[in-house]
Length: 554
Image 1: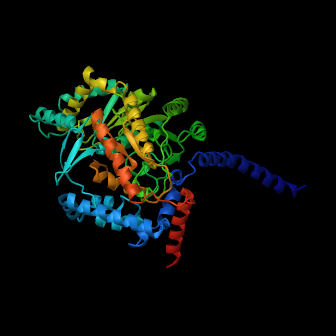
Image 2: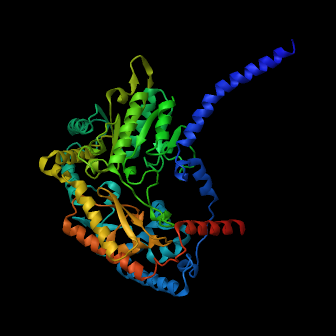
């Protein structure tokens, strides 16, 4: 009898431990299942894999036949490459020279030059197809470089340029005149701030505003306030989404330290909704509406264009339903729903993504275009979420400040922007906006299909992505053929084309013609040759073999 007592005690203890541990294990498994299967959804794994990738590069011979092309195709490519290089050297001489000199002391240029294309090809491309990073003027939908070359601007100034460069020049010029009397006096407010606050609360449908110096800072403050008021620790972001470069929202490659209070979950997933319904530590959910174009995928850039698997699949109805489901769960669980509209704000609709998708957020962040072309970040939120202190605990505060918040010149340029946005004549630009840009995408795709080119585009309104329809390791070359035809792209290449809304039909027709010409020339130079047995999977396997050979050859 006595000997059975310890056994019963151990059994009872085991049952108690199991009862205590089982829910935690179950919650952990649910969290793991809610992550996207790709490396995009597993930040720790992606960092580990990134550290294991060895550097290697192709010499002049292997550069043109890394996909197993026969000698005649390799020669065809090589001739085309150096012919294009001669065009760049002659046409962009001054721009290239200044860029080369500046890159010796500007770390940003060193990075962008090294990562325009997959690293195996980068050195030879930099030597012969180096792109100039300087422009001297803009007009209409064009920009002009130091050599006098005029390009159609498809960079969109990384999202700033919604209404055309001339529009922002006017905002800045008018704003400067209005701010001149006060000058750069900081700490106090220019009177125009009151008008800006009124308009922003009307646009966002929210109660209060705080100003910041960038979109990154605005998102940081929104998350901090959500944590402060919910007294919860974790934020949820979705696989592939970009919310600035600060640590908690960049848990994978690019951040030397892994955040411990961030969940990266799958976009448009019932498993994610289950996690939100069942966990008690989630303070907020961050949504970047741009992800509607490529859910669960990183921002597309040609530096990662190793095959032709990149694609977009914007489904407005499906994404709207997802946001509505997300809204419902966040309301039910007291989770703060934050729309990060730093990139898409005022591009999709006059009242942003909330209007476009018909879903109301608890907090919204804006930036980019809002200040009429000058740097800014804004948080709009519910009154109860924006308060930075507690009446009953005076030492318990949520601090945020910035020397240049509410800078007079930024505020007056913002007022110019918002005044124009509110005018009936100007707001008409949004009428039929999707129909216009969807129609233009169909028009270009029809032209590409007619010429049997392995290229097509997908779009979220005026934000476009180039896709490739046949397996290839050389799709990244298209950006250089486009530049030779007078189309200016940002450093991510064909991953993102951003049109300003002042593109007239004639402007777009010229862009489409040049785009098709560039693609035809690339095809004629042999870059899209591929063996019948070649698939995206076989390309990735070949790259893996190259990496393993390099890794274990040491």
